[in-house]
Length: 233
Image (cartoon, rainbow, N blue to C red; front, side, top):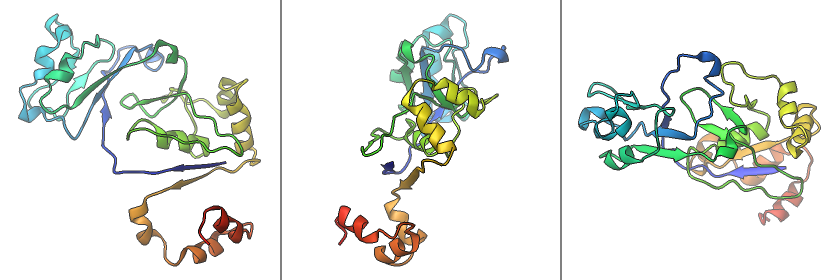
């Protein structure tokens, strides 16, 4: 199975979530939206905190958006947010994005790094003999999905504080093609490789011609076949 991904310069984004009082349910709450604050664009010291002042939930006395001129970043509560989008329009730096989530994704969380990070829902399914393409903007989980499929990142099913073991993970994917796929990965019956295409970094990472590198890395002595398939000959 071959999965390739082309990387571009990442746009850093930060998913901000208010702390919860009940830690037992912090990872299982059913949120209908996520609030993303761009760490590069959010500049509370250079604005009038329009997001907070215009928020109808804040006006009702609830801490939906917390930010002061001394803060480095605005904090938005996903639980209190009603998805009106007013803060998105009022932010002078276009630093806020509110994303409404389909309700049918509530039980399909594959991975979440922490409380203050994005959630990856579901996974693409690689199949032998087929090309799988992942297309989308930066920060939506393409690299995370590839790492999970390559066995380099164990999916925590959204439980970042108490990650499940592989037995539970396989049970989660029971009945799907991914159960068989991960079983083969774990038993070394299938080898998945990621080939990030940082084209501008190639000269810094490797030396020599393409032929020399293929001769050095080849495990099957099939360089001629690969060159023909990729039109390199």
